Image (tube, rainbow, N blue to C red; front, side, top):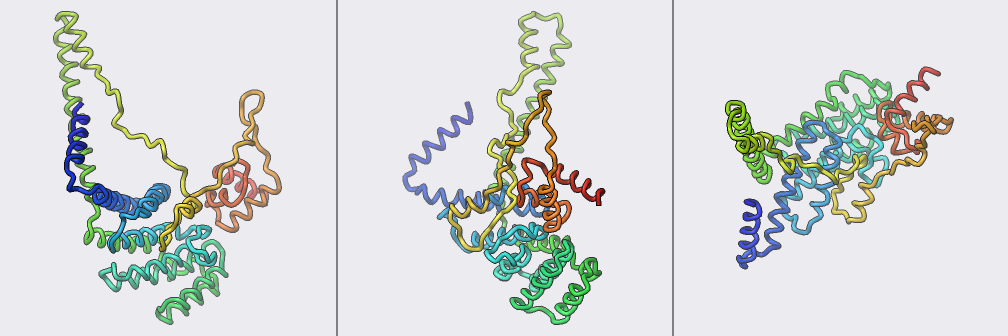
Length: 369
């Protein structure tokens, strides 16, 4: 009853105060929400939670399209999220962020990073990230056996960016000799790139706190937890009272039992009934995109489940692997590398099979070789 009273009071206040323009209130709320989604993206990036990052990214994209999202600070955060999306997908060479299919995620990240130079207080940090993006653009191609792509990435950087000549010569030699695990590549590893970007994020968030809504929600959760703790104490005392007063009146005893077994009608756990499937191809464009384009970018291949027939005994019939499906699997591994089953599933129709099934079949094919 208390929340209803509070909501009614808030409604009456908003209706009675005609000096407040609702569009202005909406703009403030939208800004707070965008800040919260930005902090959530930074957290997912730091923890390496790709699926959670993709889901939050979709929500962030939708909110960023609001006309009320204005100002340099919000534009910076939108650009930074575009950068983070490209870095976290840096090893997924099949993910495209640009119209030019030859521009891989880390190459696209370098383009966005060049527009964020003013947000970086430390010039050396900016240069380090640029070099790491260059080295890893080459390294991830070599890791998947794509020597020609590594050479193309190096030429692309030489054309678009300035960096020490000796660095270009060293990388060119590594590509020519296909030294996938060269000590130089190991010293400028992908994990070091992630750590350096995280240092940049920490410094940016310290300078530009975006946690107003986060702090307010945290206080609300803490208040709720304290209230629940008090209810637990009351429940324990009621149970003890029942044990030490067994000879009391039956009616009083029933009342005590009722208090002891008190249950909440509604769980405090929020269930996300609208949780979407994993966004395997997230896109954050440097330019503003239309709702139609956003829908196209976040769409996924639907999984065909029509072939999951059941046998008379109620069990699913095992589908035979055809030569065509085996060929799809081999091409997928060649393109994306072993272990990237979700990317392979996206490119070919495996008739309802899962990533685990692809993994098992690949083992069979390897043994048969």
